[in-house]
Length: 296
Image (cartoon, rainbow, N blue to C red):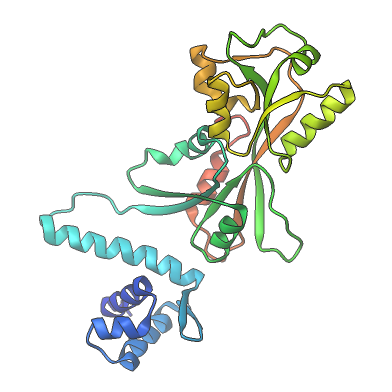
C-alpha cells in the first residue's frame, strides 16, 4: 500500500509544532481526527513516531527519521511549485555537537569529507558535556565530538569512538620561544598558558613538572582552545596545545614549536548513541577516518 502523504503532512506539522492541540487548531481539524491520521501513518510505517508523555509529544527514533524525510519531501515540493523544475538535490542532515572548548581546526578536519558534499547539510552545535549528552539521548544530535570520553557504565547507551590522538606541544611567539631550549629551562623561565585543572592534558603537565622538580609560572588557565590560541599569538606566554589548534600560526611562522616535546598526548573522541536506525552519514564518517587523516 503506498504512503498516504496527507498523513505524512499532518505528522510533519505536529512534529514541528510539538503540540497536537495547537496544530489541530491551525489546520482547522479536531484533535481526535488529527490523532487518527497520525495513528494510521504509524500503522503504515510499523513504528510509533511520538512518545506521548502526559501532554507532551517527543519524537521517537523512527519519528526523527520520518521527520528528516518529510522535511526533504515537502521542501522539494515547495521548490517544484516555485520553479517548475528540480533545482537541487535532496539533502541529508547530519547533526553534530561539539564541546564549546574544542579546537575548531579539529572539528573542520574531522567533518571535511562531507562538508563539500551538495547532498549533505551539516548542523553543528556547541555546548557543555551535559547538554551534548542530552542532545544525543533525545536524538537531536547524531554525533558528539569531545577530547575526553563521557562517563558511563554497561547500561549507558553511548558508544565512544577514539578518532584521533596527537602529541601536545609547547608553542609561543618567535620572540619568546627559543625552540632549541631544553624543556626544563622553558618551564623554569617562561610563563605558561595552560588548560584548566579538570583537563587530562593539564593533569599530565602538572605531573611532568612535579617529576622535574619545577614550579612553572602560570600566566593563564584557559578552557577554550580558541582563547588559548589567541593568548599565545598575543605573547601572553607559552601555550600547551595540540599542534592542530595553532596549525595556521605554525605554518605562517607567527608561532613556533619547541623541539623537545613534553610527551603528553591529547585524544579526540566521537560519541554516538546506540540506535536501531543510525544515521548512515555517521557510519560513513567513522568508517572513513583514520587517526592521522586530518591531523598534521
